[in-house]
Amino acid sequence: MSRSAHPAGPRHGDVLPEGHYTAPAADLNVLDPKVWARTVARDDDGVATVGGIQVTRLAEEFGTPAYFLDEADFRARCRAWADAFGADADVYYAGKAFLSRAVVRWLHEEGLNLDVCSGGELATALAAGMPAERIAFHGNNKSDEEIERAVSAGVGRIVLDSFQEIVRVAHTARRLGRRQPVQIRVTVGVEAHTHEFIATAHEDQKFGIALAGGQAAEAVRRTLALDDLELTGIHSHIGSQIFDMAGFEVSARRVVQLLAEVRDEHGVELPEIDLGGGLGIAYTSEDDPREPYDIAKALSDIVTRECESAGLATPRISVEPGRAIVGPTAFTLYEVGTIKPLEGLRTYVSVDGGMSDNIRTALYDAEYSVALVSRRSDAEPMLARVVGKHCESGDIVVRDAFLPADLAPGDLVAVPATGAYCRSMASNYNHALRPPVVAVKDGGARVIVRRETEEDLLRLDVGE
Ligand code: LLP
Image (cartoon, rainbow, N blue to C red; front, side, top):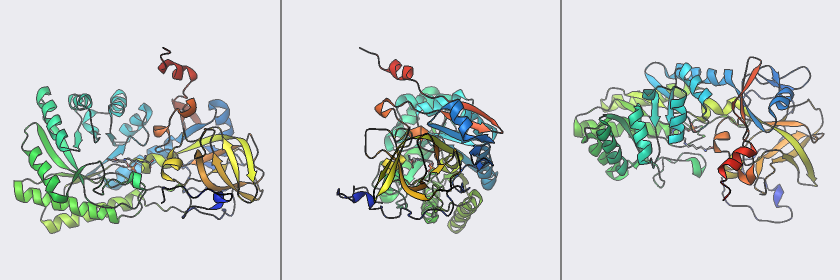
């Protein structure tokens, strides 16, 4: 994917970036189950429903823009991941994708663990009653205060990301009189086939400690030498929105090689490996993600095979899916405000949100789909670009999509698969008020994160 702008010119807008889909679906009224949350359907009146509730009713009650999260789907996905990995492995939901106290309670009830990467995420997890031993604490630059909170709360694992951190965590553990379980995050030198900004295992980036040049082996040596740390395993996360298992395979192989080296050098078999998250989801009908069961089987086969050939007992595997659990379970509902047909190019459809509630299109060239959801339409498809209301021409929500040509102001459109990294990366740009997250289940809907208000904004502005 290119990160450079295409050249300006009178017709530059019709140059579709490579890989963007161009053909309309046969029937724009169909809500493809691949990209929509499980309980989404269109009722006899042609209105889309989620959890049995019409989106028109949801818009009246909760306003737009808003994220609607299908709780039954979220819980079903948690169970699917937990069942797929079974009793010999652990699933840690990556809270950065989307975290709220309600979500933490669902995870707890469904038996998942939680990966947090900041003091704020840790506070949310603890406030909602997640047992500390089921929390993993990540981050490439944890502050002393964050380390202290994590150790004193008794988190089950801190994932060490640098040489400095080995010492910092050990000092804190000593001071607090605890022996802290830790893993070491390594970079395995894999180029994940994903956008540069979300690839994390090649060597030239900020995360982890490189396997190359014996760096990771040195980190193991230093960690094992400190009594205040209990080194339980090695961690690798290769990137995000990945469909191809080849990167995981190389990563698992290299991590197991390190375990074998550790055994040879120190006589210790580390009991855990974590292969991170990063499994892709369908944002458009073109994407074909794998099912959790296939992923679990592929990963455990690779690890078992590699361990057998290295003469190691198979370690306990853990994974950290964020997007693959929450991503497909939510959609963003917008109201159409203005419509500008640009002759020979496309029609710009402006909605009442934009890059403040979904930065992913602007940041990663992400692709999304969109549908008219407040009614059916049998009008011809028109090539549309769904844009927001921000003062930025890059404020694009859906770059290229087909919507019915009779689309009108006041219609509701929805963008599916916005459960991950949309609310959690939302901003107040242009003093936008961040939208609420509404959980919908069995005919009931409730706000789990409320809409921001102007009062919230003014409260932060001390006014001096
Ligand atoms: N584990 C670690 C150590 C991570 O850094 C991440 C994501 C995950 C697990 C979860 O990855 P997932 O399964 O959700 O792909 N903002 C970007 C994604 C950044 C991911 C950062 N780390 C996006 O919107 O695509």
